Image 1 (tube, one colour):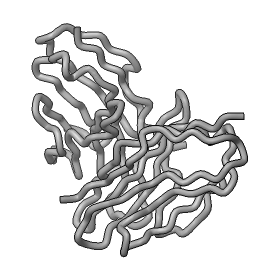
Image 2 (cartoon, one colour):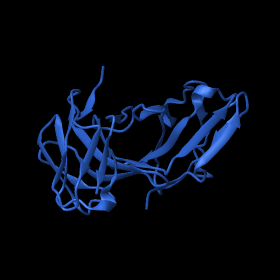
Image 3 (spheres, rainbow over the protein chains, first blue to last red):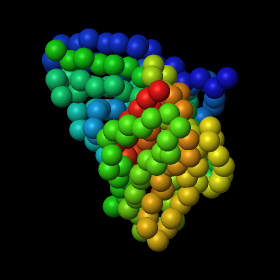
Image 4 (cartoon, one colour):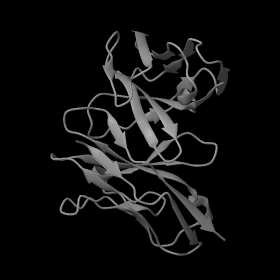
Length: 114
Length: 109
């Protein structure tokens, strides 16, 4: 079965800390994505990657960076966590080409920044 | 700009009633539209996509380019349909999906 695994289900960090959220997929997908999910705001794209070492900004990249050193792993980095980054973070992957492909999502990481 | 609008945050119906979750989009080209669903304590998953013209769990959605809408419909709601529903759009030149703000469907017994 298809798997997108996010390393932590819950994380609690302090303001100013550097935070790493890890995501691994076992489907050999080229595309990987990071979204944040907030009530009333839906899913907003932070960053995505079409290939190893490649990244593109999404709609809300400020305060975040990403790393894609291997095809199966896509990391989201909060350089200096702030309280407004408290959210549910969802990782997803897909094969390239739109028509019959879909996003496969991880279970999410609920991050609380105190 | 590409945008997906779901005007209802919450939709409450009784079991057996018809359901329509509204989705409108803004995109100048030919979009691909999707509905994703998130059941309680489960991961977000694809429900259906417009190009497939399929019915999944009794749900259907028709792309209306004139009204730029992709409403999700089911003639008789079931309690197990209670979930969060997201409409999403994929533009021609990219593999990324733009999501709406979501509609929570509550089906009461």
